[in-house]
Length: 480
Ligand SMILES: Cc1ncc(COP(=O)(O)O)c(C=O)c1O
Image 1 (cartoon, rainbow, N blue to C red):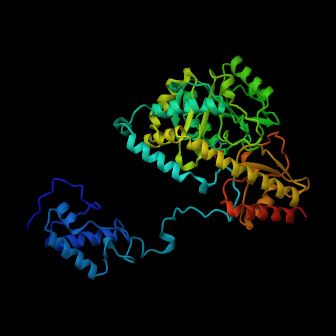
Image 2 (image 1 turned 180 degrees about the vertical axis):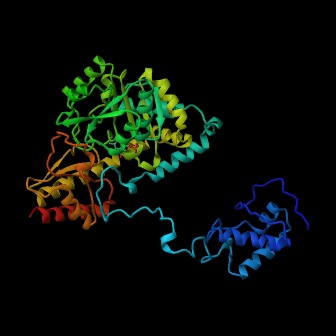
Image 3 (image 1 turned 45 degrees about the vertical axis):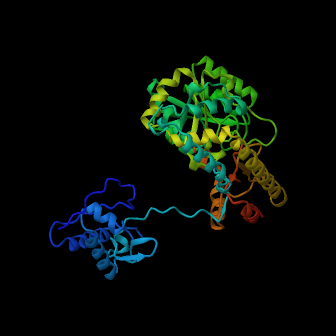
């Protein structure tokens, strides 16, 4: 059988293909059978582009004519199709594994369920507002300008460029006091929380006080390592008395905008919390998840600036850009730097190229410009929500709207319970969350009656008014 020499350069190759060509029979038949088998086994799915005859011949060390004949035969049998310009592909409708099984035999498909028609679920920004052009520019710049070492593993704290940029940025916009050496880049707040729980556990701490209500995923992450004490929240924020009583040495909180209730921690409570950390050698974990979105011209700086030595400040791009970016940052007190960096090293550093792109986005001013634009849009949405509730649901109250991308809609006395309200809203495809989904047991927080957490970031702008209109209409029906 004639053999093609392997070319020296492989850079003209199209798609690669792992093909188990049996040794028996003629070479053409063997290639045909190997392709049929790969299709039957589902390794080659309908639409998959195959290598060109030249490439496959070179890979298999066969003559090009042998592979071309095999492709022709399989096309004649309906296994392959040749489309001009796009090469040879696996045909649609070829038998796939499991096609002969009954529905009951099949593994359940993992499918993402479509969201509600009126999507007011909290915790998400408007995906359509992602600054594609600016991010594209920043990414291209990063790829072009990245030094060679950016393509290696590098410093587990993250790229020095981004750490330097963030130290300056966080000082400028959030009042955070940190130098670049003490910034650790991570993959968002939730990862940071897991790394911190490991770190605190490794340092011998056993308990963490967490606000009640708060994000259930965050509680799950911490509870995997530390005993979680539920700490009540009142109008001033997390109860420091409750924290002291719990004996925990770690306090996890959202001082700028309590999640989900929405109040900011009062100045008195901040002072109490700082004293608690100083007196009990405690650690504060500050989740500054939406600090960029403050609407009342009363910017509330980070608590970290009051006690950088004992506060771990954490921020994330999940609200400012979108959760797809998966980057966050930790301003780390010096004594925690080494164990936290080691925890991040074990979890592996975050994508270097994305880090360089984010640094570029911030340095170029595009990040600030983007935030100004989306902040304006979100403020309008918040105003629309408040106006709609005022006019169509005057019995209800909208709370926690000074900042962020969500509000609490407190239903009046005599309203049905949250489960009943949620059933009705679900039936009308209105997506919100009940406050109870964030509360663990009796919380003692201000909203004891039924309340909803309404996110106003998610729907596209043209569907927003309809979404809050549908919410108001359904609730009106329930409250009538
Ligand atoms: C309270 C709170 N903290 C932090 C985050 C950000 O988490 P991550 O950076 O892991 O996406 C969110 C995002 O939904 C949040 O709601």
